[in-house]
Image (cartoon, rainbow, N blue to C red; front, top):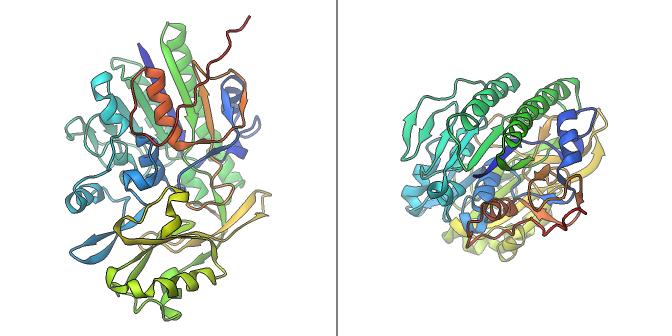
Length: 423
Ligand SMILES: [Zn+2]
């Protein structure tokens, strides 16, 4: 039986994969196909990227707009933290659906099913399968098909927790159960990168453990292949990171400029996805749209400002009265450990503020948009480098292509090529 194994190291920048810092991943890059121009969703934040990966569609189609987003509820713009476990049921009650297009869990349920082990936020974990077609294992609660509750994963969000989860994953998906798609989503190195400078000794120590956890899965796949299994192995990440060079409270700036009425006014709201912000405009404040555009265009903290007419260029749409998307100002300067790429971050509404000098992501800057992708299996040239653009929306079509299942209605395209047989 054909099977797919997907291993994601949350937040792993492509330029951190090398023989010194990630020896197992570097070794795998040498035998898989390595993608040098792989980009991710916007905002480049885990919950959005997860929805984009599992649907093969941009946020404009699946409707999960950011790590935070607003919904228009009874005429009121209500900001939401998408990471909360109750967000998706709430979104379903407001909009009529969780994600607007089917997930891999739904598409593959009749073909052998999907099992996900995930150690990031509950909102991101449940984004894999919001309507309960497969198995999702998470420390906040695990679920079987039909949303039947199972014991939560007993792991912490750190490298040791990732290690324990990796062991369980291998015993489960290569043991009695043989799902057609197995997903292991490690919380590291993203977690440490938010809490220590990129390239610091603390970061590199955790990165080494993440590398070893990925190596355990690569070894397990090799053993199964030696036993005759036909496996497509994908190892990658959802986004990269930039060093936080400053934190901007966008709503306060809007109020100070006289654009937004007050902190709790409902005329317009800005919600953070790390280095990006989504700005929603209430229908009654439509007359303020041009002023808001002028304000955003003149701010020193605004990198790219995308207005409603151009949201499609970044995979977004003006759902829920989304009026502007902003990628905050970034530069290529190095941090104290010689790691290039810095960005301003948008102050979050609920989480603790970003730590200056540590990592963050969410925007369109170079390194947050340079995640890792390696693919090994039919249609991918061993040891080759693929320089043509690839996008996270291409993963689901590639998985379906490998399994020989029609994947209608996805935005992305499969990445396999007809390879000449070796002589
Ligand atoms: Zn993160």
